[in-house]
Amino acid sequence: MGNAASMFLGPTLLIRTVSARTPDDNMQLVRKDVRSLKKQIIAANLVLAGSEAQQFWPIYVRYASEKVKIMDKKFAPLDACGADLWEKLAVAPSPSPEGRQAPWS
Image (cartoon, rainbow, N blue to C red; front, side):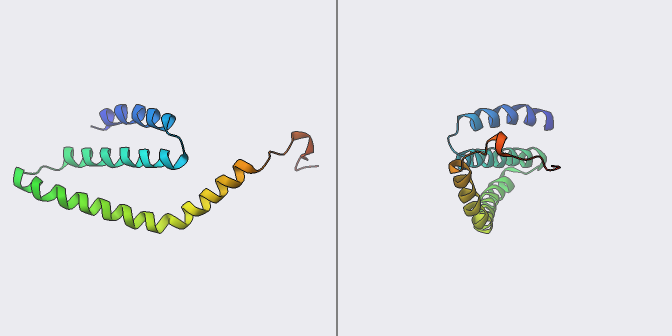
């Protein structure tokens, strides 16, 4: 499963990342791909009877969505800081190479 998963995940992430418009879009697509791959790995390694699977997957989906909400809330301050930093980097002019001094001079 590992080799097959990496064969399919790599191109999927690359194609989706290249076509996305913002860093946030990129991150959402990567997260979606990772969650999908995680479900595939669990399904391949967890042997469940039909009735067990019918009970397990709704609980797992609820657990995963709650975990996403918790992590989003936990990292929201960092996201805000990161967005502010991206804004500053996009607006700030690059220093000219002639104006820089070598650290040893």
